[in-house]
Length: 49
Image (cartoon, rainbow, N blue to C red; front, side, top):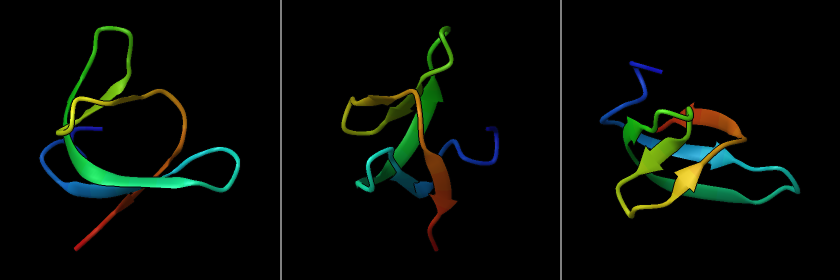
């Protein structure tokens, strides 16, 4: 998780959808916070270059 914070990522979500954004933090509940304010609880993270 620490390597993800501050980086541009793609999250492959259940159902075949995805979301791109910059990871900026983790909530106390373990949700990944994106720069746009959205929170993600489930998905596969791909680090973008």
